[in-house]
Length: 113
Image (cartoon, rainbow, N blue to C red; front, side, top):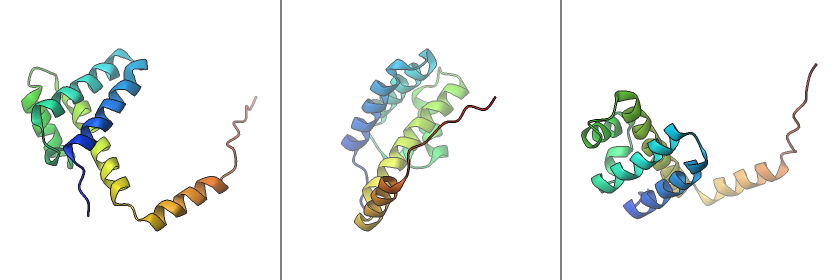
């Protein structure tokens, strides 16, 4: 198994931060705080499990309310686990997914009156 490096994680959190800049103020702030937490902690391990991520985030963002802490922990946990999954996915499985996506038809939204 290949682990996610701090640099890879940081790059992905930065991408998410940029992506969410066209979102709501709350989501922008959550992404900004996730970046701050990662810069402060400088470690990947606490974010693999959601409960450990929350514990780590609550130490760094002790002034933030619990819901904000949970959201920051969630964004870090989801990004890290997605990176880990993609990094450890077999070539065969990636090819299978690409083929499956290629064969899918266009999505058509229908309006019912």
